[in-house]
View 1 (cartoon, one colour):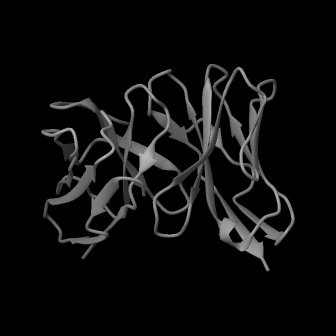
View 2 (spheres, rainbow over the protein chains, first blue to last red):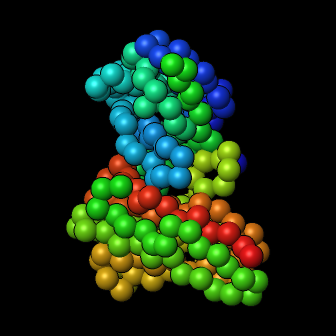
Amino acid sequence: GESVGLHLPTLSVQEGDNSIINCAYSNSASDYFIWYKQESGKGPQFIIDIRSNMDKRQGQRVTVLLNKTVKHLSLQIAATQPGDSAVYFCAENQDNQGGKLIFGQGTELSVKP
Amino acid sequence: DGGITQSPKYLFRKEGQNVTLSCEQNLNHDAMYWYRQDPGQGLRLIYYSQIVNDFQKGDIAEGYSVSREKKESFPLTVTSAQKNPTAFYLCASSILQDEKLFFGSGTQLSVL
């Protein structure tokens, strides 16, 4: 089975609030993690990535946190907007070979105006 | 969608029929990939190619075939051997040995 999974399949937040999407992974040897956003009927779009030698990485309104001790990854979205409504996937690269990512099942984020 | 074009957006397959999904990229990427996405599930790797005229099976290659005659193109054929072909198919590309994938907009395949 897949080694990457999400704690919550759906998340509903109020516009302007911060969102936190969680992801668990099982392979302690994974050295690269990535988050994608997928809107309905479209392909996934890259959001942010992080390597295992880092604990935190920030982008524009997004932060990824990596806790290697408990094998947990999270995506934080600040000041969530209606346009953030989508399914968010985490993925890991287990074997140091480019592009062969293992994807989680996804979390659907719904932003209420 | 970047520079990856998938066509058609919707495709219908009759029983016993082979169908081919197109994927073209103008990003000059060496590596290309095909993923299958079922409702409520993550993406699963079907085939990938890191160089022209070479490709490898992914986790769910049975019932599918690919070719890589040109760097820009990586078509996927869903054969009649694939008994459950209804899914959303995603093509992706990347710089060789880079983990970050760039995805196309997908093709929804349904069975008539």
